Image 1: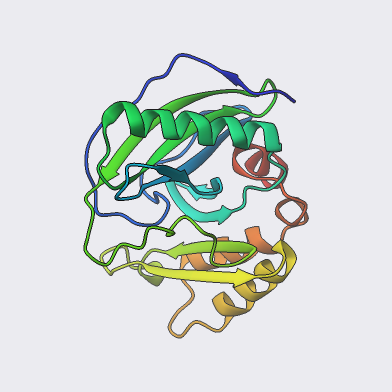
Image 2: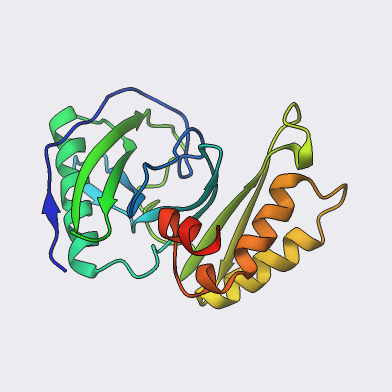
Length: 210
């Protein structure tokens, strides 16, 4: 499937976030996928982009699982996303780093920019921060283990394959101390589902699992 770019609709701003977005990021109905490309600017002005992060599982407009690389994402589409992300960063004159977020129609391959957030350079920011820390990475968010007033818990699970990461994430969730809140039970059910294990994400996953 070839990549097709629709009208770019993005918003500026600055943030200190380093990981993939995890708030108010639920997609519209249909076969929409949400993906994020991190862009890093070296002191020389050269731009580098990381692999695509996908907001794979969400609930009530909150992203609960993000993963990299995005499952079953065509190389041509990922390449196009990275090219557009670098162009957005260059056009906006980002001095350090940022994240460009996309909405992708999984059926047609058409995508659009839905957000662009820059962040300031820090003295300890590595130039090669875009390099992956593992062949597959899963970030899992749990909101207060049932009490939304408590801080959320983030698990960063790494592995050589997606299957290995899913097994480790399920085990880590089952071994978390404290009561099993709604998010935790929901996440364990999603991670163990045949649809998610096969690579379904986003609205496709919701339609398959219910």
